[in-house]
Length: 512
Image (cartoon, rainbow, N blue to C red):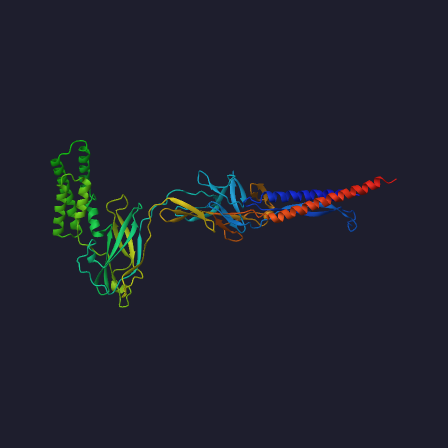
């Protein structure tokens, strides 16, 4: 007679209740995976190997198996909350030790690393300066909060229809300030090497049937005139010397009462020197003698105006410069209304222009831009701009970021640009039940689990990621409560077998 069976049953039922209790306790733990107590019957061995007449001697706990089924994915308001939908584990590092977890609740530490509540850093791939993913050995992901550098405009693509019924403008020659001298103006923001915005306008002037000239202005000034202004304002050593002398005069006279006569004389001298430089620049650009005379008169007049500051003199001289505009190219259409490369020869598209940056911003002095008009037509319909795009942008600071389903962490910047900041990797195992539980929703690989299979989300057996979401515990609370009732009854039944054995033994002891 043995109490072994009942005792082992009590132990097994108690272990099952422990597992069920742990599941219920973690019903709200993010990323928790429920466990299940698995049992095996126990038989006593025989010397001759015959077991057919031997009763079992009880039950043993064969294993406590984790159930790696998918938990419900729930949305949150935190972009650093990430849920795995499918197979795989987050790969984290804590104190040099690699761990694996399904809990995707992360925060940024003071150094920009993504870490969980226990300080384990999320690992993945870094990025190059240009935002390209650098696949290699997984390392802790560090989010760069630095500004994105500006990119100067190098090309402008425009698509439009020019009305074949439009007439030749009545005002000649072309003047960006006179709408009667052109048929259509199309402005677009472009950016210099420092990210400063400039308004580049393209003007379309019909010259004959199927023929159009294209002029370009920078910040409302036609680029030929803009180039002259830039050349006249401090581009030579001589003019820089004049500027330096003027600035020194301003500094030395700042603290004494102004002398109108002296101011007039000094500024007149400055204006005369400036006029010389302007004249040289205007002559180079093809200005007529009449233009040059007008420029000189405006320069000297500005210089002789009592109370004019040097900045005002600069502005007046720049405004006085006026040379004939020069088209940057010609658009010629065939009888079907399409651009004709044969008719435009030897000119080819895209058109290459140098866009002056004036007044100087400290960036490059001339922006080299290619203008393309692919698909532009000349039909008998209203002149309409379809689309105009350019490839530059100003600098921007990081406003927000989130992880895509493929694990790429995409940063969004104040200038409207997006840039990859890193890529999360996942790991999977041939035998996840072989992992060793470390607590804090973390597991470690063992010889039973096999080596980790590391890769990017949505590849192989690895699932996808959901940003601003968490994976809830996969504990089915209703099922666990039913299991608890069952385990309780099993415990009671095993206690009853011990009680019955005790009653039988008592009967034997009482025999006389």
